[in-house]
Structures are given as C-alpha cells and as structure tokens.
Amino acid sequence: MSKMIPLSEPRLNGKEWTYVKDCLDTGWVSTAGKYVERLENKISSYTKCKYAVAVNSGTSALQIALQLVGVGEDDEVIVPTVTFIAPVNAIRYHRAYPVFMDCDDYYNIDVEKTTDFILKETVFKNGFSINRSTKRKVKAVLPVHVFGNAAKLHELTKLCRKRNIKIVEDATESLGTFYKTGEHSGTLGDVGCLSFNGNKIITAGGGGMILTNTQKYAQRAHYWTTQAKDDALRYIHNDIGFNFRLNNLQAAMGVAQLESLSQILKVKKRNYECYKKLIDSLEGLRLADAPDYAHNNYWMYALQLEKKTYGCDKEALLSRLNDAGIQSRPLWYLNHLQKPFKKCQAYHIKKAKKMLDITLNIPCSATLKQEHIKRIGQFLENKK
Ligand SMILES: Cc1ncc(COP(=O)(O)O)c(C=O)c1O
Image (cartoon, rainbow, N blue to C red; front, side, top):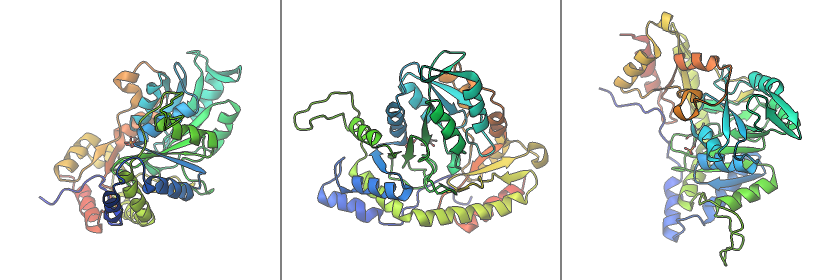
C-alpha cells in the first residue's frame, strides 16, 4: 500500500530549528523571553490589529475573550452548531449558555438567521438584548471562520453594536484570510482568537493569540492570562488569574512559521485549485467554494458528495478513503446534538444537517504534492 497521506500535517522547513535552539542555548525556555513578544508584534502587524496577546491555546484565547466582553453566569452567547466544540465549551466555562445557530453555504454562521433571531427573539431592555423565551441576556455572538472561510460579519457588527451584543471571533482556522475590504478575519468584532495547534495553517506546537483593537481589553487579557499579578515582586493579586501564557519555545516556532506563512498560503491556494479542477469534473462530487468577498487561506478542503449521483454515501466513502491511506474525516458532529448541549436553544437548524450529510474533509497539508492530489483524484474516480 502507498504511504498514508495525512489530513493536515505541519510544514516545518523554515527557521524553526534555529529559533528553538536559540531558546535552548540561552536558557529562555519558559513564558518569558524575546520570542513571545516578537510573535505578538509580528501577528499584530500582519493582521493590522492594534494588540495581540499570546496565550497557550486557542481555547484559552476564547475563554479569556468571552470574559473580556463581560460574558458571565446565566448569560447567552450565539454560536454556530457547525464548529469544533472548543468555542462552545468556552461559553460553558463561564456558566453561560450557547444559543445554536444554523450555517450558510460556506459552513459559517448563518448571518441572516442570526439577525432574525436578534430582531425577533430578543427585546432590547435596560441596555441589554433579552432572549424572550429564556429571559437571559444575549451578551455576545461568537462566529467561527470555518475552514478559513471568512464569515459575513460587516452588517451583523452594526446590528450588534446597536443591541449591545459583543462579537468574539473564532479565527483559529483563518489566519491569512483577509476580507476584500482589507480587514483580517478576527479583527472586525470586539475580540478575535487565533490558534497555533499542530493542524492549523501555521503551528507553534500549541498556542493561541487574542486580537483586539481595544487597549483596555489587551491589558486585561495580559493580566488575566499571567495570574493577575498586581505587584509581581510582592505577589499581590487583586483578581483571579490563569496560567495561560505562551512559552518562549512555542513562540520561537511560531515566529519561524509566520515567516513561512505567505509561502504556505500560496501552496494551499495552488492545491485547492488543483483539487477543484479534478474533483468538480467527477459526477456527484464537488469541492466546496470559498466566499468571493474574501481572500481565503484555504486551510481545510471540504469535499461535498451527492449520494444518488456518486453512488455511495459519505460514511462509505469515508471508510474507503481511510482504508486506502487517504486520511479523511467527516464534518464535526453538530454541537446542538452533543450530550452537554442537547437542552440548549437551537434556532431553526436545517442547512447544518444537510452539510453534515454531504461533507468530508480531505488531505490539505501544505506538504501535499501534486502526485498526492492526483492519487486522491484517481481514487475518487474509481468507485470500487
Ligand atoms: C474552530 C476552532 N476553535 C477553537 C479551536 C481550539 O484551538 P486550540 O486547539 O488551540 O485550543 C480549534 C482547533 O483546535 C478550532 O478548530
């Protein structure tokens, strides 16, 4: 059997060794050291976001982001049902509740339905948007830029501002995705979150970043993620803090990876186009489009299958692909159906169910070669 083609593996051919070795040689291996600030500054200038605060994971970034915008016990946050579960869990870390929203054609939060929900299902009272059915305050919307596709947020941002609903963007999958209007994904709302997990477009082995244009948020983020030190020398803490800071070794890797980002983005786009040509020519299959209002990072590729025409269903194809050493996975199971969230409100979810039925993710690493894509194309063509 040919070698396994992984779904998403890191591409480590820049200065990773050099920078990590520098940390080891100089002894700066923990949360202090020049690479942490260097990564923050580089991300801030790349995304054109005023402040970037480095943390130990995308999940920590989300947890702190929600705290920054004031989400607390018994509040509600509108979140898509189609996403990796991390942002949904982050809502519950604050003892707040998710309100699940449907997805659009790009797997992102359905902005029309979200608008509808805010206008029809909430009432604006004493400065807050109150959910008519639960009587809870809807404090935030948490859109996720799924697979690197930019969520359509410009109009929603205006409505949310009027209704005192904050926007926390999960941009963990969309580093490198810019709207054609110029903004980087994750910088339209109040706070944005990045991840440097191993499967992301660039990796630090693990880690994340909080993005914000609000100085007060940046200061609080730094304070809370470093144990809330009011006097670091005398151990004075006036609030509850967390040990969420990124370490220098991870940041060193992150800096090296960021230097390769433009190259990685080129390869991802080229591979997407190559896949698209092959797959769209096959009956019953297509590669999901990217929104035309943004420059996509093409982080993850979504294969869509029409069972009748293609001749087998998603589950059968998934097994065949994995058996043949082409690592693939289904779309995340819908979060409003997950055990901890079954009782939470879900707003007219329809498209997400369809997308779950027809979608598979196929290998997307920046290490992918043309011969791999050809092999995958041939495999998909040969249905036996
Ligand atoms: C949409 C989404 N949100 C959040 C996360 C969490 O990021 P991390 O693994 O860095 O905690 C991930 C991926 O891991 C993700 O895909």
